[in-house]
Structure formats: structure tokens, C-alpha cells
Amino acid sequence: TGCYPSIAHFIQNQYSARFNVHQGACSGILSARILHHHREESSLYQKSISQALGREDNGDREQQSLQSAPQLVSDLVATLPGVAKDHADAKVDEEMLRDFAEYMYIEYGEKLNKLSPKSFCNAEEFFELLTLPIASLAE
Picture 1 (spheres, rainbow, N blue to C red):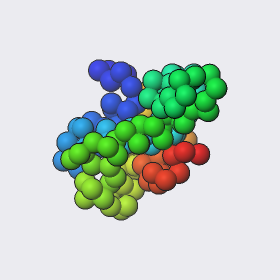
Picture 2 (cartoon, rainbow, N blue to C red):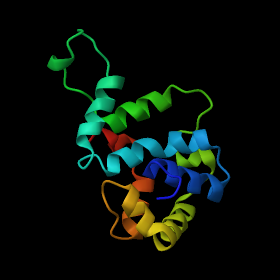
Picture 3 (cartoon, rainbow, N blue to C red):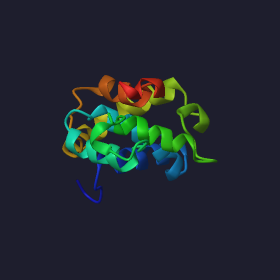
């Protein structure tokens, strides 16, 4: 997997280079979507993220139903001033994302699947990750 510790780091670097978007903005746009993609396969890790970022209203973590890690990450990003929160903020449209998805799967499909807890069967699945509406992250 080279120098990449995670799928998010790899995808965000490629997105940054392809669209000339600041790395922090790439994290804001993509992190929650990537977590959502492999949520079932990484559920134990995502539970830890939910616990770390979760809101404790009554101080009893065990009695609370935790929000999903992707939703909590998205909520956190929403509070950050100056950080892009969606592709439109970075002036990246659907056609650009489709081309990017095809490129990534053709050129790096094997690497994506080594880094991801959930494999991609084709470029369309990668495109679906990229275009997942932020509103659906709570599902």
C-alpha cells in the first residue's frame, strides 16, 4: 500500500491532486463518505469514533444510542469555518467525479481494495461513495 496508512488518506491525496483542492478540504468533503462506505466492515472502530465524538447529555454513555461515526464526522466538519463541506464548495461537479471514479478504479482499483475494509467491485461503486448525499450519512 506504499506510504498510505488508510484509504481516506489515499483518496484525499488523489482528489487534492486531481482537482487542486486543499488537503484539509478534501478531508472535509470525503472523510464521512468514506467511513459510511465501509461502516459495517469497520463497525468496531467506528463505534470507538462514535464514543469519542459522541455527545453525552446525561453523562452515561452506556445508556445513550450513539450517532453513526460518519454523521458525527460530518457534524464536526460542519462547524469548521473555511473548510469545504461538499464537492460544490470545491467547484467539483458530477461529471468530474464520474471521470475521477473511473480513473481511480482503472488505475488504482487494486490499491483501493487493499486499503479499504470493504472492496469496490467497479468504478460505479466508487462513484456512489463520492456522491453519497451528506443527508444520508445517518443511515
